[in-house]
Length: 278
Image (cartoon, rainbow, N blue to C red; front, side, top):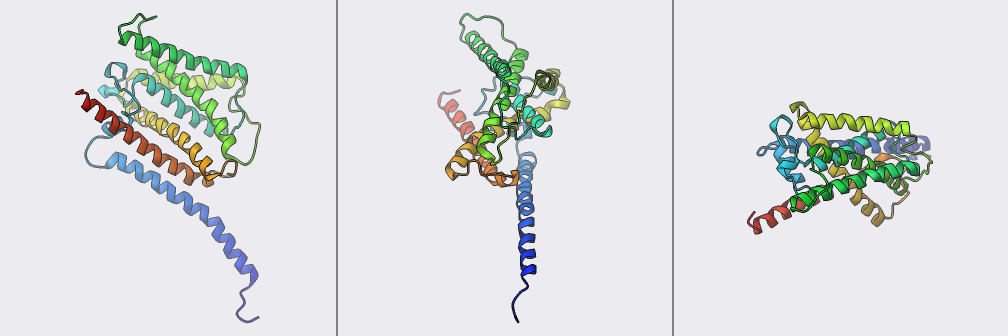
């Protein structure tokens, strides 16, 4: 009939719009993230390291004697927290780069015991260090390298134990994939952590900015993951996602909230210290 549009053309147009919509969405958020990074790096005023130290200050005590100084510059996080969040983000990078980012099954129980033992070791080292700071009897003399090592193992455990649970919450498709399959696989992760350990311990100026950025990103991802769980639960979208691009708007909101939370904690810490005259 005259004036009636061909059905085939209409379907083709709708298919084209549907196909290009994810590209626009992904592009928008890519520009958004690059804009945040550009503000952090190029905004006039304080240096990048000063901004990172301020951002992280509500999360970490940042005790100078408990910190590393690559190139003579103090890292934004103390040795223990540098280890935790560096180990966390590096483990996530390895998981996603090896195609295990959507694994939904926890490691075998024997490996879980080993991972949890690493967290226990960090707790023991932390209480031992606290006892020394308070002038109480302690088991041994604390050392920043030990703080770093136990932190890295804890970050590894956090990523390997938390990600499968998050994947079960997010994704519609169920799978029996394990993110940690064998002892040999675990040794690969430990080898990566050893590289991180020596990079921090070297205190070379070359690793200053990568370590500062990666450890701070680790905090942001950890906080964003907690926020994301709440957002997904409130929106009743559990188990409905098929593609990363569908999850991206929710994660971006979680990331913005995490940034706000870190800034609020930093300001709260500063206010408390000022009220105490410190």
